Image 1 (cartoon, each protein chain N blue to C red):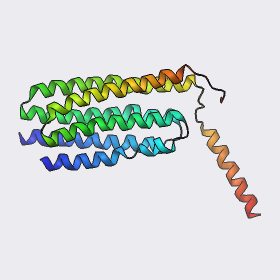
Image 2 (cartoon, each protein chain N blue to C red):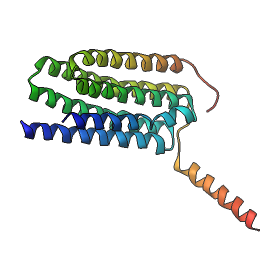
Image 3 (cartoon, chains in turn brown, orange):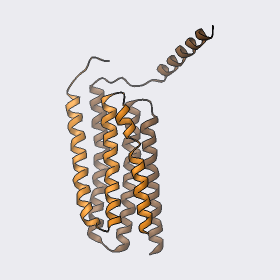
Image 4 (cartoon, each protein chain N blue to C red):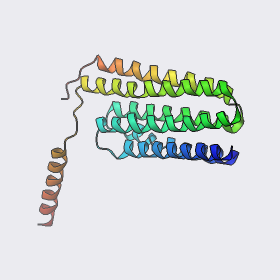
Length: 121
Length: 90
């Protein structure tokens, strides 16, 4: 019984780690489409792992109705969270939101260095 | 063992505050919607963990299911509303 609880705690900690990585990606990535990449995959995996850990905890306590409901929630999250992100990306594409390219960043950096050189002169 | 879940709920609360930056300072409208969706998804997990701390998980699971459905329908409605418009900023 104790081993099952330790396994559940490990899975829950792994899920919290994935949620943290998704949050950092949501802040650090450069444009909307790449942020959707962080939110649609890392967050879904983290939520599914944490709910799986709670399911194992409930299974160890012998409450099977709660386990069935948690299974339904896992299936619902796995279906709907990427679907919502995909719908949002489709709306942004239809809105003609401009994606981010690496050459834009390089050009911006070049302009900044030119300005800095002019300031030095 | 209850202590583990109390610490976990505190950590989850800290994690929920991270996408709030994207909601407040997002460059476009879609970034704000994405951040709000991320907050709602993480709040679902927080409600479940708090239910486990209070030992009333059977009640909190139903709240979580309603919250998940509301989050999904809200995001889809906003995406549908914005997708039918077109803008001039290419």
